[in-house]
Length: 264
Image (cartoon, rainbow, N blue to C red; front, side, top):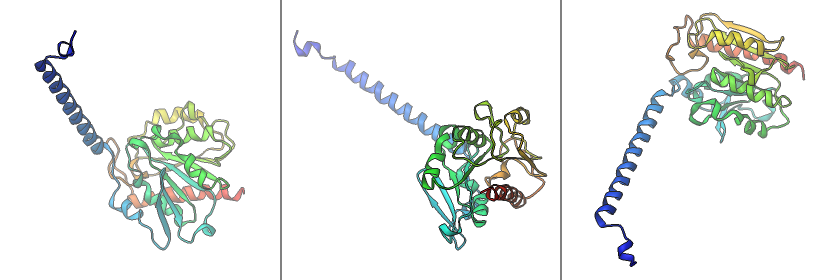
């Protein structure tokens, strides 16, 4: 049989190419649509959060492959232990946590905010590895907001020898991240006007907390004001300002870390 007799008839070949082009075009449109919808779904940082991302005489802000770093501007000699690793809430831009990171850095702590693929913590549970590798001799606490807290807890369970404490912002541990037998300090922080947190799941999660867990409620605060990204869908209005909640959250976290520092 000749090569000409084996070749596709030209009309069939043209039709096949046309189908492939249309299929590729439809796929491209779908991907672009998904990208646009995803961008709409992600909570962006407020103007205040963006301002907190800028280095100044007090805090140096830098970007690494795994996320953002906040350090006292005086350098290594000014660093107070422990370092802090923060996992963002689901679909929240990590820069939204710049205000609280800046507060902690102004107090002398080195702070890392993880940048998660697709802004979802379950896609980057081990992001903390890169931060700890920078200063493996240092002490670290890890925590997160909402979904970020769940996966920060799971990381801690798998790295108990590298973590000195875990904190939760409107979050809880599940069975895979159970700290029931942990010996280090744990801080559980919630807000009275939180309309996003599943209080039922949070209550069930208490069985995964060690006896030394410290529970703190921010009276009048809500879910979104643990970060700085505006109003979150389903949340209740806060009875305190974002600045007031920021001051209380950072103050409680600093006080809790002071006790860890005293154990050195």
